[in-house]
Length: 110
Length: 116
Image 1 (tube, rainbow over the protein chains, first blue to last red):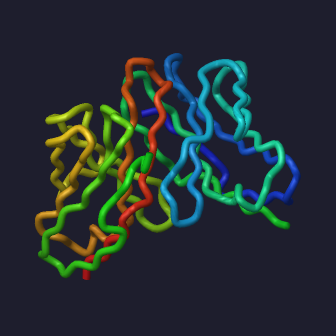
Image 2 (cartoon, rainbow over the protein chains, first blue to last red):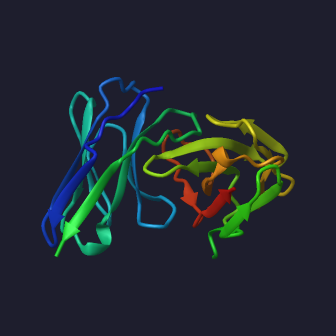
């Protein structure tokens, strides 16, 4: 299975943008890039996904490198409620299985 | 919509005891999953189901059994609990995989299980 590499932790100030990086150098052409996050004591929740083009939704933006070997999740204005573990996951076509790594712990300071 | 619910929320077992965790979803999803999460780690897939009456093994299936007798329910059983099965268990569901890579999994709140 293709793997992802994320920093163990990051810190941000409230109301500032946050860029969470993810490396996936072994990604194949049909792998989608998914981001989930897990708030304390909760189950993971979907954030965003993409294949080749940059994507925006109400929660975040996903910037995908041209060679698809890396991507960045962008939270435009971090709030205290965004403090969570963020998982970057490669979802293989018809794989039906999300493989979670350890993720990035995001701490937001007020 | 309640989404994905899990019963119970907490449970303490003694080694060798058995129990069943219940997952229910009201979104008419075809696919359901059971994961476990150990402290400081990501989730690992135990078993999953692609439809009523079907189940398949995930990454860490040993020591667990599952059943999907009804579309909305997915049961996870521990026949003889061991301390290594102390973990938080999450259930998830998703609509289908007809559009590859575009499906979203919806997770329940988790069941915290301790085996003494």
